[in-house]
Length: 383
Image (cartoon, rainbow, N blue to C red; front, side, top):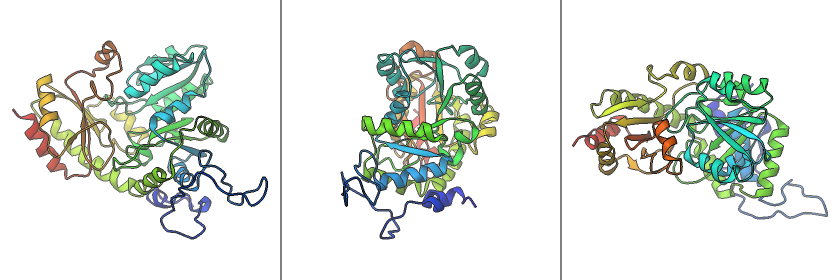
């Protein structure tokens, strides 16, 4: 019997669970660099050096694997370290077909690091499967998508993308940060690799940085683990414990945050200073039906456009409960200015093409009362 999602948030997979020798309820923080050997070539615990493996990190990886229905998971020191490790799977001359609306840090990585190493990122609208199919070349090795995308909330058909990828011998890599495994499980929809910025919804408290790569194939996850061991960008034991503690409440947090986000999105839709609301839970969203077919909800991320730049700056300056800050997914509601915070390294022409202009704001809905958030946004929007 496979336990419910809520139970697995707390226990992982009980049948394959890594247990503490002293039966601690809260899995301990193994704050050590090395583990002793009882004789040459033998270590009873199976752990040697924390860069390679650590019990606290292994327990966390086990939990995330259970939530994503993965064969294995590797925990990294940041979401960017996780993305970087995935791109180490490719060789000079390879091409990666990417959603054109990606987190700006991922675009910066592609443009500054991957390009230098001979790996090319081709940016296309992955919400249009015909465009994706036409963009595949003999050198394309993978399709890399975010859905919903950051920050325009575009939706990619994961089943359709998986079929295209596998018909052409490609990997499908999905960044699942915005919906978390509570609402979307890309591996079950045909993806090969799932990435998370664990700093966001998984940890959920805006207090630590982490990243994860999960895969449905043992050979693939072994390659990622070797890359993490070799490059060294692994998650520290204390941070592993913080994320593990955060995951215990993932289901209840996501449920409440999504409920509040729907209420706030409806209010924004009718707000006179707001010209567009980008939220997959609204029925007029172009990706509404596809998202509903592949995810169990729409999450708690909302982007919206206001009538002019002056209004956008006023909102950022006047909010009281909502915090003007980069990041997302925590219990505190945060409002972000993508053009200057998350996407400043994206060329202006590309930003304008995507709609990431001076009038766009991104809201991460936290656990405050939804009516309080609405009241705060109302007073900030009004002159």
